[in-house]
Image (tube, rainbow, N blue to C red; front, side):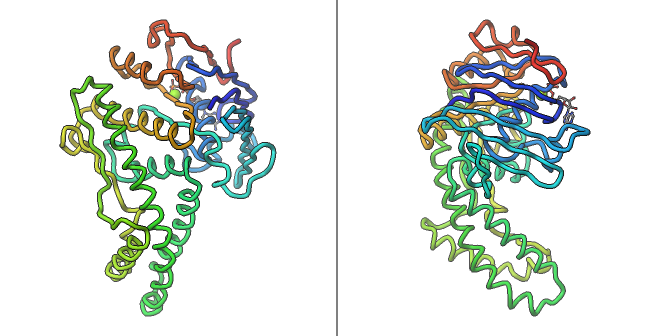
Length: 361
Ligand SMILES: Nc1ncnc2c1ncn2[C@@H]1O[C@H](COP(=O)(O)OP(=O)(O)OP(=O)(O)O)[C@@H](O)[C@H]1O
Ligand SMILES: [Mg+2]
């Protein structure tokens, strides 16, 4: 897959700008705070319908403007696609090939990307939220079924949690089983997808990690929490878990079991990575997960995603930098950095220089 161009209108610090991308390595360079990450973020938004650094879409709108517009044209193995997003204060509209799409699930995954930035260290070092977000975003891009199950699950979960916050304990205990029956259907689907994804991800991430570290470290990944094999059995088990945590949930005012609480266990050399590994190890482990994700997209979608490397090269030592670029190969890559010359040691690329929200031509 190749993104050919990207047009930004009132998006972040861009007023009106168009980027032309080449098939291989694209390097966005410029000083700090000029708009490199913003451009990368726009590409990711069109792929996933979300951004990793916002809490609300309105943050994407250029200060003082009424709405932002992002559009891109990509060449996929199914032909050419045009994706557009219009973001306003309190709503957004998504378009695929000029037609408005009603559900995000129909928009996500038409263009795939893998995003890596220094913030991705959180994936290794922070709490389970980050790892669930990684799973959700990643699996959603290749499975519409997952994307749909996730949004239905979230809606039912919100309703269940609202109910738990109510006052009439008797009524709540009577109504909960009805919600639980619905909740576990989607929960089980989510868990099945996550497990299948991790089964693919784990050996690929281990291999990528060994490649980047020259075999010095071994990376391990597994789902924590044990669930039965098939979806019906998972649902049955969850139903029991929900029933037995009902009183506790009522006390807590939220649902304390289910896939919204699950985690992945990540180990380096057999030891828990969280709270143990060095910065460099965490960075390499996170990068390995992303490279493995890239491999999976390539297998499942039948073509490579766009790899976005935001500010990553400068943090790696020279041998790892070279290994990374070698591993990326001919995948389309959008890479940001402050000094293209220093990080790229002469690798061939399409150079785009950015200054104050404009491409310098
Ligand atoms: N909604 C917005 N409206 C206007 N400007 C914004 C908006 N959101 C972010 N900006 C500005 O965009 C500028 C560029 O941000 P960006 O994160 O793209 O910088 P960068 O080029 O990646 O810099 P660095 O090298 O420091 O990572 C920042 O100065 C930021 O304040
Ligand atoms: Mg940046």
